[in-house]
Amino acid sequence: MLSEFSEIKGQLKNLCEERSNLLDTLRQLEAANIEGEASGVHDGEFQLMKQFSSLGRGKYSEYSTTESSDDIEKQELDEASDEEEANYLDANECFSEHHTSGGSVVGDNMENKTIDASAQAQVVRRTKLPDPVEKEKGVSLWAMIKDNVGKDLTRVCLPVYFNEPISSLQKCFEDLEYSYLLDRAYEHGKSGNSLLRILNVAAFAVSGYASTEGRNCKPFNPLLGETYEADFPEKGIRFFSEKVSHHPTLIACHCEGRGWKFWADSNLKSKFWGRSIQVDPVGTLTLEFDDGEIFQWSKVTTSIYNLILGKIYCDHHGTMHIRGNRQYSCKLKYKEPSIIERNPHQVHGFVEDVSGKKVTTLFGKWNESMYYINGEWASKPKDSSVLSLLWTRNNPPPNLTRYNLSSFAITLNELTPGLKEMLPPTDSRLRPDQRHLENGEYDKANAEKLRLETRQRMSRKLQENGWKPRWFQREGEDGTFRYMGGYWEAREMATWDGCPNIFGEIDQDLLNSFEGS
Ligand SMILES: CC(C)CCC[C@@H](C)[C@H]1CC[C@H]2[C@@H]3CC=C4C[C@@H](O)CC[C@]4(C)[C@H]3CC[C@]12C
Image 1 (spheres, rainbow, N blue to C red):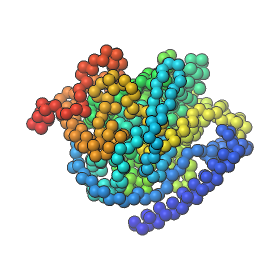
Image 2 (image 1 turned 120 degrees about the horizontal axis):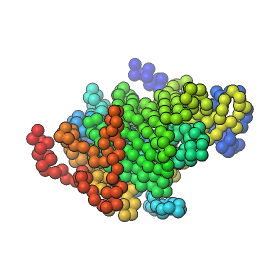
Image 3 (image 1 turned 90 degrees about the vertical axis):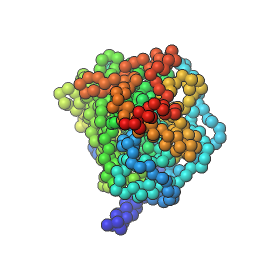
Image 4 (image 1 turned 180 degrees about the vertical axis):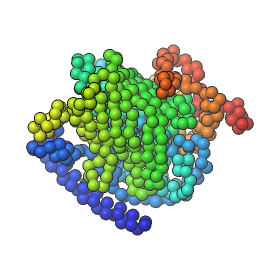
C-alpha cells in the first residue's frame, strides 16, 4: 500500500518535472516574443485558454514532492485543549506570493523603505520583515503529527514555528490588497457601465486568493476581543476587524473605500482527511456601493494538501456566485486540481443578466490574472485580441522569507511611527508572541504563546457569561455581524473604554472565577 503510494508519487514527480521543463521553455518563448499580448490565431476558447495558461508567470512548485527533512526536534505537545478546538485552522483570509523552496531568510541589514508619493498622505511603510534575531529551527510537521496519530489533529497545539507573523484579523485585510478594483467598479457604475462594474467586482473576488499561494504557515488565532485596524490613506481605505466569538471562531470585518463599503464575517468549517484538510468558509461577503448597488458572495472551498509528505500547498475549488441587486450577477468556477488537468488554479465563469442570459465570459487564474471576453464568444475573431485584462497580481517582494508574504502583507503588522500610542490595547500589532515571531525570537514567542493560550482557554466561559464584542453586533435574520461604528471616533479621542488589556497578565479575579467553576 505504502510502496504503491510512493511509486505513484515518484511517477507524479517525474510528470511534474517534465511539466515544469515545458513551462520553462514556454516562459522563455514568451519572454522572447510576447509582451502582454498573445500572438497567433486559434480555433476556439479551448485553444485560447491553453495559450493563456502558457503565458502564466506563476510557479508550479507546489506540486513538487520534495520531502520535508525529518529534522526530528521533539516538541512537547500540549494536551488537546479547548483553545485549539478551532485553532488549527483559524485563518480567515489570505494572500501570498511565489514559493521559496528553502526556508532561508536572507536579507541585508538595511531597513529599506519606500516612500509613497501620493499627495494625500506620506505613509512610509516597510518593504521587508525585520531580520530574525535567532536562527530558525527546523521542525517537521510530520514529526509533530506522527506522535499524535489517532488524536484529533485540530486539537493539537503546534509550536510557534508553524505560525506566520500575521493574525487572522490581519489576514482578512489581505483580501483588500486589490481594493483599486472596487474603486474602478464604483466609477464604471457611476458612469453608467454596470457591466464593467460587475467585472471588476468579480476580479476583486478572485484577487482575494492571490496571496494564498505559497503560504504554508498558520496565522495566529486572535484572542476573543482582539482587534485590528488598518488605515491606508494611500489606498483610500480604512479597515477594521474584531474576533467576535471563540466558540465557534468568528471574525467580523468592515472596510470603507472610495464610493463603497465592504463587510463580512467568517467562520470556517474544516474537515481533516489525513493527508489534507478541507476548509469551507461559512458566511457572506457584502459589497455596497454608495449608489445603492449591492453584491454578495461567499468564498469557495480551500483544501490544504501534503500535510504529511511533500510541500504543503493550498488550492481553491467550487463555484462562487456573486449576486447583485440590479442588472447583473456572476458565476465563477474555481476548477478542482486533477492529475490530467495540468493547468492549475483556473477560474472561469460568466456574467449573467436578470434573464439568465450569459453576457460576458471571464477567465484567468486566481494566482495570476483575470480577463474577460466582451460579447458573444461565437461572434468574435478567435485570437487574443478579444481579451481584456481586468486584474493582474503584484510582483512578489525581492527577498521572500519562508512565510512568503506579499509586499502588502509585510506592511500589515508594522508599527509605523506614532501608531503604537494610538492603538487600543486589543490590536493584533501589540500581541507579544506574534511580535516575537516576527522578530525571530522563537523561544520568547513560544513562551508568550503558551501564556496567552491560558487566557484563550477561558474564552468559552467568558462567552457563556455574556461577553459581547465591543465593535460589532449581530443583525438581521441571518445574524451576520455588522460594525456599530465608533472605533475611529474613539481613536480620535484616545478613549479606549471597554477595551481590556487582553495581552497583559491575566486578571486574578477572572482566573479565580474560571478555575472555581
Ligand atoms: C499545520 C500547518 C502548519 C498547516 C498550515 C496550513 C495553511 C496553509 C492554512 C492554515 C489556514 C489556511 C487558511 C484558512 C482560511 C482561508 C480562508 C479562505 O477563504 C481562503 C484560504 C484561507 C486563507 C486558508 C489558506 C491556507 C491556510 C493559511
